[in-house]
Image (cartoon, rainbow over all chains, first blue to last red; front, side, top):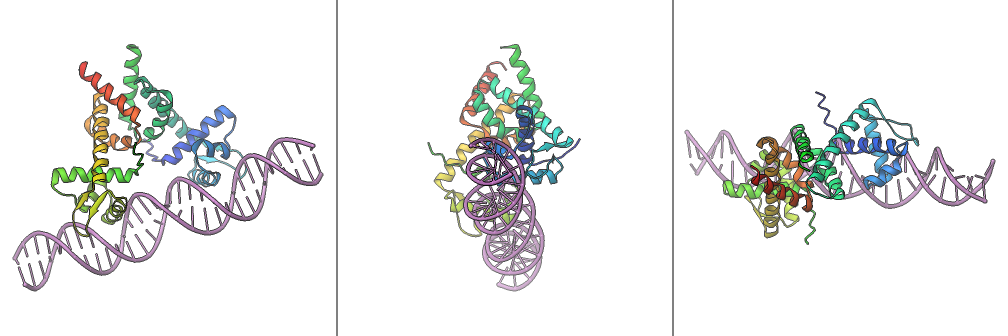
Length: 128
Length: 128
DNA sequence: GACAAAAGTTAGACATGGCTAACTTATCTA
DNA sequence: TAGATAAGTTAGCCATGTCTAACTTTTGTC
């Protein structure tokens, strides 16, 4: 029961960092800035907050890595994200909208609701 | 196509103010503070921002009223809120959780998704 | 290897939305 | 109606997350 209550910012960052490491081999501030629609100084500042929170490991001017707990948080976020997106899509919503809405919605979905989404998703497979 | 992009704060406040006026006859800062879980000075400050934004009308130490555009925004928010709550409940989620989650989710639901929720809700009536 | 371009950082400002402490105004009640 | 209590405001502080301008470091290319 790790009630970590990280900020949405933290979740968005670790989620994206994990994705960038997976797809690009490394996570660079310039990519993060582009993807999140913010400027590089904002990324620098936020990454240092993440570092202070023990979620990332990093040397100045170098690529960004996740710590174990960052990794863990990222995995949870990505899982939740996938469920929300899939659920929205199962309602007939186009992928782009589903992606966009999920980014906002995922931070406000309780465990209860997430489970319900998963359940509904399973139902939609049966009736497809 | 009034792309007003009011803040979540503004939406939460006008929504609540409309509800208080309906159920209590008037909207008072002390009630707003309790319901939103903030302290009275925060309410004072935010109400003055809402006033500056043309959403509420109000004299110091008096009750709070919505302007026409505040009214309009409140109505839209309440409508969206109702749909999101009803939709979550239709998934089998308990009302309390649905209410809690909806408060966070409703600000991130696009028109497309809202329509899809409404559609799914209609389906659930048929199959109830 | 030098130097230009790209990437990253630092410093400092700003808006939002929260707080406490102290004060003022309104309301209730004896 | 006076005084106590409740409600509301003001002033000033803080954290978060954003920005621009100017600087430093790294990278890529001739």
